Length: 384
Image (cartoon, rainbow, N blue to C red):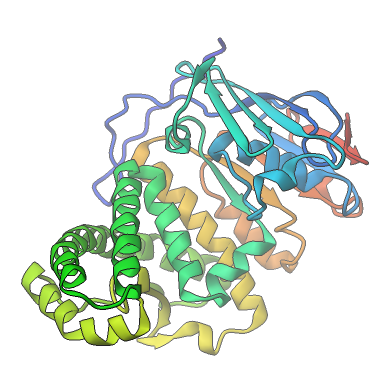
């Protein structure tokens, strides 16, 4: 298997570390799909630092990115259910990615009915979590605007994803918390009884303990992310002082304090049948001078902020792990004015491979390098 030249990086303390004497390029060598969306069955070569997908809307450019993301995480970045990935008229589909990685050679994911089978180098993976460290992708797409203008749970989802990329144990913490929360909510929905009160007395300390672990990680991650994001936004938009603030639902910082909070709210929670506080109600705010920046931000500022969130996410991953993610950029340059486009490209996060989608009339040729792969996409067929 091809191995990229070693790269040495002297990284300092601020979230960066140099535990890897060298890092390997994370790249897709090829992608083979069968009955995936509208893509023609077959295999394409992807072994290039930059891969351009050029075509009109609706031809399948984004479906290629989705297939790559699917191999990276076992799910769609567009929030599509698995059955929506299967081409109309078919009962199953698959995506096979060959990798340029000395530790993992290929990822195969098959969908058939309600079943999903994931293999890494021919060995079955029992959990999508096992894919996290193989070949992480960061996707830039229009749907990212929801992380800025959407509901609090959308921002939590973005920052949870950001943390999980470099800390798989955080994903375990989240899953554990959600299991406890689900059980607690089921008890709250049931008619009050001595047995249910006893169950809540047992569940509350578990919820508090797990919640405190999540809160501590979220607080630290938000500070670190803000230190990356603020200068980045200023460099591209020219607007200083933008930061990320984590606002936990529980203001209490101890098990005892949270326990009292849960006990005080129990009667109200029983009446509503839901847990009213905890990490599932945490918020993230984009602030400037202590005020909520989003309330006064223009549509253009919000779109740029969403784009730079992904840039900061990729930069954070590289600084912490010593590896670069694969970047998937879906028409994100289209909406930037020429100056902001230039500034964004100057601030692009480090990457070993990036896939871009372009409309035919975009000036993609000016971004092309000597080794760039360019595919024309029409009706799901990719042609060089």
